[in-house]
Amino acid sequence: MSYAVIRMQKFQASSIRGIENHNERLKPSHTNLDIDYEKSHLNKDLAKDERTYYMRIKERIEGLNLSKAIRKDAVVACGFVCTSDKAYFEGLSQSEKDKFFQASHDFLKKRYGEQNVIASKVHYDETTPHLHFYFVPVTSDNRLSAKSIFTPKELRSLQDDYSKHVQDNGFNLQRGEYDSKRKHVKIEELKILTKLEEQQQKKNQLDVEEKNIGNREEILKQRKAYIELEKGKCLHEYDNLKQKNEKLNSNRILISNKEKEVATRKNNLSVEERKVTAWEQALTLKKTEIKSESENLEKKINPLRSEITKLTQELTSIQQTINTAKQEHNTLGRQINAYQNAIVALRKDFNRFNGLQDVLNETDSFWDVLENGNLRSRQDLIDFQTDIINIQTACIAKHGMDLLDSILGSLQMKNISHGNGWDVAEANAVLSKLIGPEAAERLRYRERDSFGR
Image 1 (cartoon, rainbow, N blue to C red):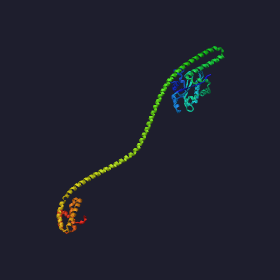
Image 2: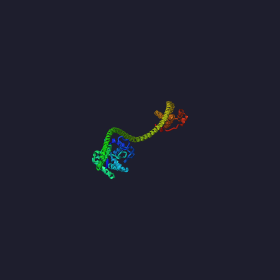
Image 3: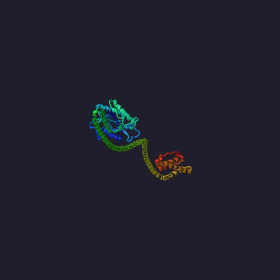
Image 4: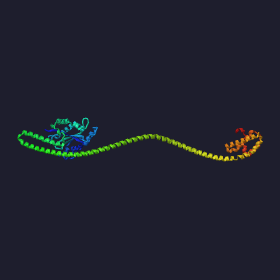
């Protein structure tokens, strides 16, 4: 009777690359001599994914949003091997084999979550066909914990449920033996154990034949001896594989150290990336501050621009005022020059005033005439002369060049106003002598009070 075999193994991150290389036949194996690479094209992928195993695991764990980073020695994947003995598969057609492994795949996918599946690969290129199924151990409350999932109770239940599942799908296989020591053996050891089981089954069959056929006892002994020999060979091969596994473990340690070194470098790169991110954030903040400050300065500049425009207009107006003032200044300058010229002319005329004494001396004879005109008293004469001089001085200050006409006019008016009865003909003669006949002819006699003393 054949058994439904399902074995589980836990893996850390350092083992994932090797698992993928073996499972996907990315590199030739120097330890597994059962692989016939000419048949590798017969292998089937039941969970196709273009990503690497590492990326599938990484993205699934990141999707959990764990509060803490996982430890370096954490179990990030669990793997199953689903199979039976070689003789059992030799009795199945290819479609029945495919059905068996598809049923095994569906059982594990449903039990541990389709979203957690990493890979599911059927190997037909080895001595005994088998399924490799890998998944991320995520608990129902979204924790990464293989320990919480695979309790002793779960492992026993797994064997029972798997055996029942394949039987329900039409495969006449018994449940695996209740031997907890064999639940976590490595894949290479599993292959040896599977061979041992096959040999044990053959031995059991021979024992049955030995009981039923007494006359073939010798033959059975020979077969037993042969089986024991084969068993010894298998055990020897098993020991060799164990030694190779030890070497592999040593290599795995070296690889693990290298991976740790790589992880350290990645951490250093992560630190640098965080620094760069911090610098970029600081730069962005500084740009924002500069932009805000620029906008504030722009708000302050706009009123200043308006004020500058206003001041420019006022400056233009002031400049125009200055230009107008300059023009007025120039006009005043010209007027001042004209006044200065007038002053010079007045000074020249004033020099003529120096000859006033001569004019007054010439009028002495006229005063004599006035004295002969029988003025009322000597004092009247003096007053009359004083009035004439005051009038003359005022006329000089006011009229300048018309001095002589004013003087003579004043004398004549004072004479006429008093009506002293003096000789008009004689007075005209004296005036004609002083100012000339034409000027004397122009004179008009007026009342003395019209000038006001």
